[in-house]
Image (tube, helix red, strand yellow):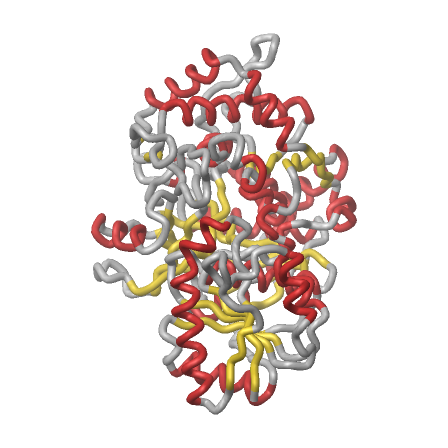
Length: 528
């Protein structure tokens, strides 16, 4: 049997060129495996004069799919981060069996790219199967691949997932959920979206008609307005923010060449953006804001990541209005990275519930990046690597601000530089979650876990296996195996927040389940 193969890539050619060797290696392994099984993998677009073989735009993807037999079995192979909209149009009209495959590696990473595509296909109502492997020779991969080749679909173990029942929740959780939901519907809330649709993440756009009945609305803002407002911030104000960070003990790794190194000037510009973002959130009455950054703004201004980390903690530099009053003093300004609106709604609910319960409010999304066994022997469980592409709130890091550090964002993604906000997540009890669209409705998966503090050597090994400049959380998830998590998860992102202890994390999770149900979201317990 002949099987079509396509590979979606980045919109940034620098990333496509650097990541192409890993993609080529993965495809060679897949080709060998399928040949041994009696099948031929036929690439539908070839490497060309650009120096890579990725589909690098939506139009290119449409043109490739126009030449593919729509009944042909098809594999989307991903060893890299990819822009899902490059191939989504073609996949929506493909009739043959679709299989998304990723290499089990933290390098670029294919797992994150594939999970984003899976979430996008789920939202679009496209039937697909999914699979992953480190070397494409393990029994799990080979058995599931044979299942797809024989039946056209793969059935994974989802016994860890069950609908959340309101009757099982404590009265305290139901009362708090009802109270917060009523307040949101009565007073309404605004998500400030700085340019929708970051990096082709169709799954990260929540339809307005699903949000409006909850009392949640979008203020669609322009990154050009943020750029202009940042440029208008006086240097003295930006330097005051920078000095605040230095006084907190934040470490900056500066170098002489702005094209490759972090510079003080880049950080000062990020401080300008932070001030501008806080003021815009205040001006428009946004409970949460999301900065896309990426395409467009990346060519004009240093990265938004340090800004995002500052916004998501109550312990942040003060920003004043024209009358001298401090904006939301002592409060986090919820930021949803990469304008992921599923994370936005989730983070607003976390902020409301955790404030009411006196639990930690600092929250962030992470990429479900990768994971493996702990080689230090500290824990026996499989340990996930959660890693967001630039910044997590310092509250999550061992040592807080003083335990965090700033590196330059990698030049292949971020030509204008800018500081990350890196740290290693402290040990503690966490609640993880994801809001996504499936069958035209909002659904939420939620579960429990533990962030584990690993020895420095093991933490360093894991960080070096991914993108070293970015913050990292080592997580053990309760009641969910590696393959169960991959089989179920409908997004590249996972939202995380700490509880003070196990009892506090459980109470917060139960209240969030109640709140989500009151708002009309279908909730599923995962592993708990």
